[in-house]
Image: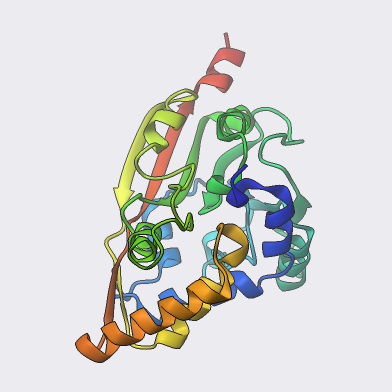
Length: 274
C-alpha cells in the first residue's frame, strides 16, 4: 500500500499541522501566480443561501481563515478530518462561530444522513483516501439532488513529477514520487463520472520560482512520511543538485498543475428519488 493512503503514515504526517504549514509556506513564498488558491477557489464556486456545507479533510482550516464571511447568516459548515489533531486545531480556531461544527470523519464511511448537504468540499484531500470510489459514492449520497461537489487536486505533470524526474537523474532506483496521486486532474473525470452526471474541470495556472534551496528542502523534508525512499542521503544529494541550479540560474523554476473539479447531479440521490 502506498504511504500516501496508509493510515499509519497519514496519522503521523497529520498529527498536527507542522508538515502542512511547511509545504504551504513554499507556495506562499514562491508562487508565480500571486492570487492565493483559496481566494481563486471561492471565485469559482457558488454557495446558495442557507447553505449546508460539508468539508472533508479540512486540515488546519486554511480554506476558510480569510473567507468565513462567505457564509451567510443561516449557513452551516461542518468541518471534518480523519485526523483528530486537525479537528482539534479547527475547533480552537473557529469554536466561537456558531455556524461551524467539527467532527472526525472518514470519507469512505460518512455518518451523515442522505441528502444532507448542498455543498461538499474536498480541498487537496481525496488522494489520501484508500478507496476513492467508495468515498465519492458517499459524497454523492450525502448531497442533495441539486448539490455540488468541489474538489481541488493536482495534475500528473506538476511539482511531484518534477521531483520524480530530478530524483531519477540522481538515483535511478529510487521510488520517491514515482506514483501519481491516486486522485488527480487526469483521472478525476473518470472517477467522478461513476457517481455524477455533470463534471467540469477548471485549471489554476501557476508555477514556482524559488530562490532559496533551504525553503525547497523544507518542503521535501515535510513530505518524507508520504513518500518511499526519502532519506538523509537523498536529501543531501538533492540539496547539492538544487544549489548548483540556483547558482547557475539565480532561481529554481518548477511547474505546477492545480485545478478544481466540479461535480453535480449525483446518481445516488437521483436514484433515491425514483
